[in-house]
Amino acid sequence: MGIHDQDLGALIRGARCTLRLTQGQLGQRVGYSASAISRIESGKMRLDPAAAPRFAKALNLSLDQLRGSTVPGRALIATVASTLMPDEEDALRRRGVLAGALATGMTAVVGAGPAAAATADLDDLLFRLPDAGPAPLKNLLSEVVTARRHYTAARYAELGRVLPGLLATAEATREAAGGTVRRQAAALLARGYVLAAELALKEHSDAAWVAADRALTAARSSGLPIPVGEASRVLAITMRRSSRCASAVNLLHNQAAELDPADPRTAAVRTTLLLTAAYSAAAGSDRTTALSLLDEAEDETARHPEAPRGLFTVEATRTQVDLYRISVHNTLGTPDEGVMAADRLNVDHIPTAERRARAWTDIARMHHALGQGTETFAALRRVEQEAPQETRRPALRALTTNLLYGPARIPGLREFAGRTGALV
Image (cartoon, rainbow, N blue to C red; front, side, top):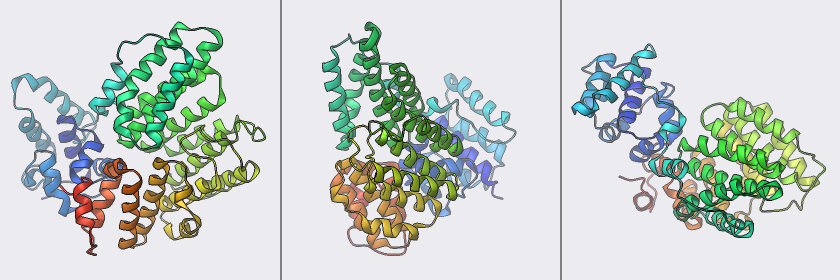
């Protein structure tokens, strides 16, 4: 007899936590997105039987254990914990896993908190910064510019290498300064933590919570609206990823309301907040709010067509409104309503490789939702051309895997899946 979906989800969560894997890391191993792993673990999504062997292998389980065919759910958790942690020295950790399961009233193993699931590299980045001394503001600014260039060029490995030194130097500079210099250093520190949060979000790491919170704290101490808006945006994205969509919309809408829509210096900030709020509303299945916010953002771009660039990773332009319109309709389950926006796009005119790659990703998702496999693969190839590291993100690998095991046989897809890590 099979176990209930929630018990199966609890088993997967328990085995994953025991192996110290994040949802993103497990997703990479089995070809699923981190959000799909989350839905499976919470019992909101059924595990595809065809994927069971991949999950069993990734979690060091047998198929019988995973399918629950021989052991009842509560006993199965204990069996799996013993299998994965046989050494005496792990007894305390094993008891912690089992206590977590029993405390919920079912066989669910709940993580210790968002930051506990962060990847080791990002934990090192956020909690073990290297020693550094203060630097002149112009030198610190140069470091921030370099880091942002790595991000916008989708050079994520390079960004990961420079972030620890940047954050350590920015922290030291802020602490050593006072007055205006301290506020300016705080703004640069906020930008650094925003980059850390964005990198964590790319990796589906819960370390994004820590980075976004630190970004907003630093931004508020700067007293400048642009850093506060940017930090609020990444915090809201992190909230949305944790299914707190309504809270994300409220945060973004309230922050946008504090900005003067007639002030061209903050127009791009306001527009970007509205766009992110629209997508967050769509993620919460609030179609009316999502479309209303999109229209409001489009009106903003019409009033300020020459909004200054460089304030945010997302540019506040009509092109970006169209990109968000595609994303919103993909998320609402109405991808056909985004086709007109996609037809208007000239992706080559988008200024950064990271944004061009994200545009092609949204277009790929649209085509996939419409059942257009060949067009989906063509868009994925464009992602690879723009930013090869993007194709190895969990969400992109999951999309590639879904296409690979779909009904159509697409020339070149298997080779693409192999070099991007979707075929294991």
